[in-house]
Image 1 (cartoon, rainbow, N blue to C red):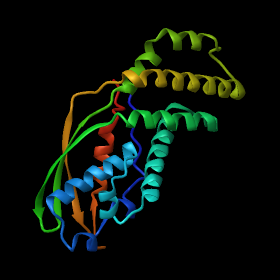
Image 2 (tube, rainbow, N blue to C red; image 1 turned 90 degrees about the horizontal axis):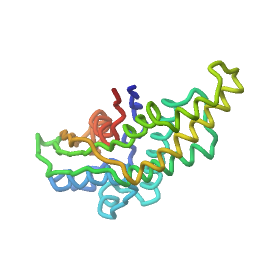
Image 3 (tube, helix red, strand yellow; image 1 turned 135 degrees about the vertical axis):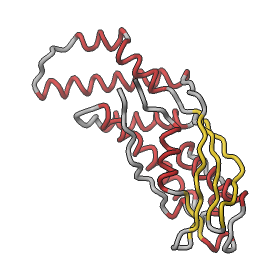
Image 4 (cartoon, rainbow, N blue to C red; image 1 turned 90 degrees about the vertical axis):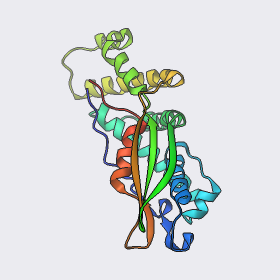
Length: 224
């Protein structure tokens, strides 16, 4: 099974860009690396470094909103991938809290930036992708718990029966995922170079495609 990652809706609001005035018109390699570190920390760990917030001219409240939106988008992506119906609101909130626990364990390292030209820096980021959804799919496809659960339901169901089944099945997914979080592991590390560029709007920002590629690595959703 392969889950297709959502095209991120997080794309680089003003809370994640550097005003030209904030760096005196230029950007140093250290600034570029610190910016990438801050973007990652805000989106995945809910860490709001004061120096980063000053750099992007943002408040902690705005950064927290970015973090909450990031987690909610990820939860909705998983729901759309796993369910035909909508879960209960309680289940959605539970999944959001589980994602916060998972992302708190995100493993990434930001290296020193390299100046490509006057308006672009390349920053190498190394990620160890989280494997928790590989573990979950092993349980879903081959575990006794899910087999026993599915055996309770008929092969043919009407809409009401199927909705009841999906809600109960998704709760089992949530329960299993929560049990797996403390023992999640990591896949082989991968590195990529992301670009921080000065745009025509006089803001330095992380390239959208680079952010999406980086976002794809944090948690691995590719299953054979």
